Image (cartoon, rainbow, N blue to C red; front, side):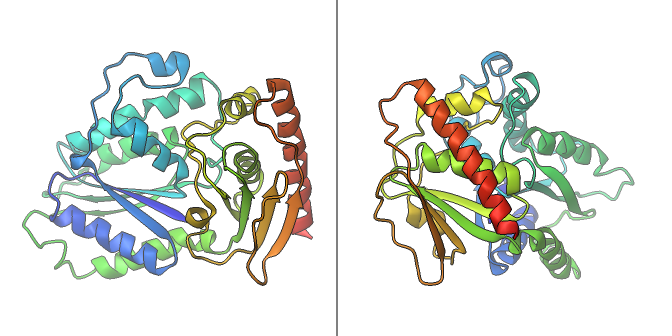
Length: 324
């Protein structure tokens, strides 16, 4: 399970940072892998409204959104946004990131593509404000509703704190530690019940990427799906992305990774090796299957389509098997 946090305040050591740190600490203690992004320190160019994303599904701006943040959003099981209130909304830094996620909105609603993780991804808001107005957080909550929808996450709740202005106010808040513990526990609980399944092949660029996407799409509520390769490629196989897009599944921003990175030192329940002989060894107690497939490299797109359909059928059969 991967929890991604966005710290939207320009103050690194302020109240917002404290709140997000407490939440991510609680998530880590529950068994999640966590990663926090200090948004102000990233190179994020504000949206220029080129509209390329709505026509072609990508953003032409070359910055940290493209190379770092988009892939992390797609990888995340849970996305946590932490921000102070600036004029009844988020900070300019966080708003720039949100606006650039119009790309995901366009892929979802204009190009009609489905993120395989959309059925399970959750979004959570952490916010503080200096005043105590009745509607202090209403504008922000509306923004977050649409942001989380764009990145295919369900808005799962929030913790909001008015009257937080001076340094240390959040740290000295009498209820924050218990608030955060309960919220993190509730949010992570469904994810902790899932069985861990790794799909592994030589390079994690085609076969295991397709299998993990189908498994995530069809059974992500019951299984934590991982994919990795013996020797991770630099990028996913372009023809694989094309044939998955033909059936409406969005593989954009996926990056190959090693088996070691995918597993992250935590035990597996199932291991599915794919391709020809992979020499991938499983740990004791891990149920292992091998799906034999011919080498796809250099083959025409029709060949990749047949692989896609075969993998989809095998994943569907595996889900039935695992239910028994």
